[in-house]
Image (cartoon, rainbow, N blue to C red; front, side, top):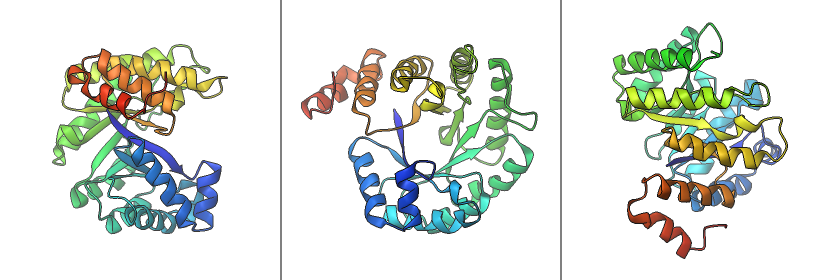
Length: 266
């Protein structure tokens, strides 16, 4: 599973305060702890700073990569902020989070993909808005994959996000996301599936429980990447167990290694 650590995000109170104060120590601590907990990428989000976002994003990249060589996921709707981040990135191939099929956003970000050879998270959304059905989302995903491939991107560098919406606002949204995942993975087996797990539980009590159940269901539907909190030991334990049960962990070697490291929470 490709794990994108979500904790360095300006929508969260403590990271935002650290960004405001340019507190390198707190940002570095979050980066190192997420990496130690199993993050494959570190998501960096400074969108709450609006006009100052490009400057804050550049500072974040420089700060984090001075402390770890973990690849970075540059999380922003702003092409300028993403460009500033990619320009100073010295870690391994970065991930851009995210592009959509909306013409303005696609045209704004597509030149950066070719220039910096980044991988990309592509959201199933276009100029008509957020689609309601799995069929609509699959058609958008199909178009995104086709257009990104025309830009020279390999399927292995594309991460389709089915746009997980809260089940508290529509009881069908969980199944819509899962059916989209299955459809994309069946048609494009080399394309990755990535989503933000916690969106599914927004507005509900005991959110961690919903997130845990959805993660295992999504893994079974073909999800092989997730934006999540790697510091949530219970969630990570279920992820490792899920990989073992679904045949994604040969001879359960990774599961056994995590058990020996006392990284599992029963």
